[in-house]
Image (cartoon, rainbow, N blue to C red):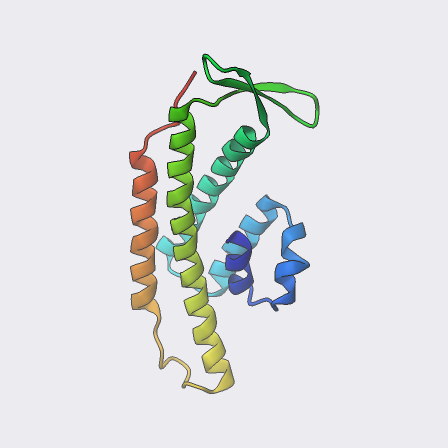
Length: 169
């Protein structure tokens, strides 16, 4: 979904979804998404939402990768080991409680990303309609819908925060 948001935010061609965007590093994508938001002159609270969602995305992707790439070491305690490409070994908590917490976080994050995608799509389609002459410049104001989607982003963020921090060992 981050790629699709970037596609809309940068006003890229559809070919980029298959060729260019998958090759970009995550931190590069997030920087470019911020630039796109500035270029589209999105509100400051929208920029804050992008920052917050991008930070959550990075953190949760790291946690998700730790779970996916770990091996169960002790089934009694729910502790697994993850071996990195550098050969470092990290312990990963794989209890039902920890996995449920991560799942719930990812569910909220998915909705949050969808709302941000809707914001970029609104702005992109408005600009495209104005460029093509379908509507007069400034005739369509997507700000009311943007506010609606921003409230959805905020609702999801509060939901993630309500879940608290990840369970610990």
